[in-house]
Picture (cartoon, rainbow, N blue to C red):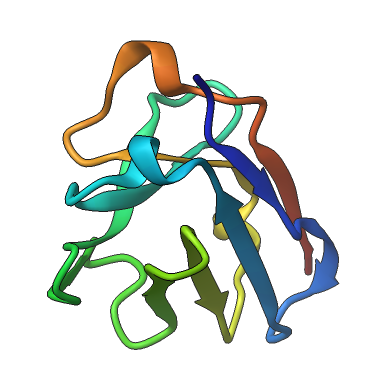
Length: 114
């Protein structure tokens, strides 16, 4: 089972993107779902997470710029990214939080140009 991320692309610094993560209901279940990213040469990191009830947490580097949300009826989690910076360039993935190794999908590439 994999969670599929989509919505990435090329955007100029200061721009916005919205990522989507879809999966089966059993994959989401009552688990927290997180957005992770991996920049070239760096380790994958958790940038935002949302519980089934809607409680959110963010990495310090994205607080105030990114917003995570979920639609439990559609088994979809979103990541709204505003005021994007070149250092946000990465492949973005979604997975449970804490992650399940077998749930990693391909991710979606976000490239922010300066």
